[in-house]
Length: 129
Image (cartoon, rainbow, N blue to C red; front, side, top):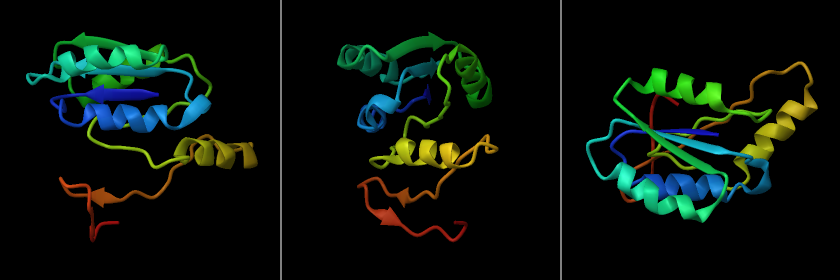
C-alpha cells in the first residue's frame, strides 16, 4: 500500500484510518511526504504509533509520479495499491479487489468505481464518471 502525501495534513488521518480498516489484507503501508509545506509530516509522525505496518519517509518535492514510483519499488507485498492522501477507501474495498484477482488468474490489475465527495464528506455528482 502506497500513500503519496503532499500538503494534506487535514486529510491524511482519514486516509490512513480507511486503509487500516481494510484489515489483515494490508501487509504494509508506505507513506511518503513529497516536500509538503503544511503540517503533513508532523501529523504523520503522530500517526506512526497506530500500527507497526505504517512506514513513513520524507523527501524534497519530486512530483506525484516520481513519489509513487519510488514508493512502489520499496513495497514487498504480493498486491499493490495506491491511495492519494486526500482520499479514503470504503470498507472491504481491498478484499473485494483481491477476490476479483483470485477469480481470474490471468488478471494483473483490478479497479473499482469511485465517488466524489465535497469538503463536508457529502457525495457529489461528477459528469465524467
